[in-house]
Amino acid sequence: MPRFYTDQKNLRVTVDGILLRFYEGRRFVADTNTREIEAVKNIPIALAEVRDRDGNVVNIPKDNPLKLMTLAQLKEHAEINKIDLGDATKKADIFKILL
Image (cartoon, rainbow, N blue to C red):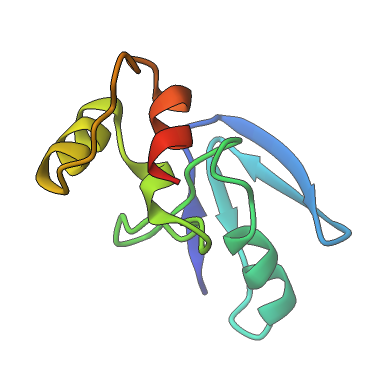
């Protein structure tokens, strides 16, 4: 049975018409309930980082993994790829330059 965890104690979110509740930061889903498993994986990362029992983040944004990086990691990424950030110091401003 897949188990999903989040740092938020009582997360409640609706994804694809399915109400997902995490009690005490945990959600158990039957192996055969693929629709609910996909809904959990589609929870926006901005709401909560959802992990499986191995600690892997399951709701990584498919469009751009840069969204998971911290500010320091984004700056390092820009430096490695020789991208001038100018005066950008906030994460949102750096995203605008990198994306």
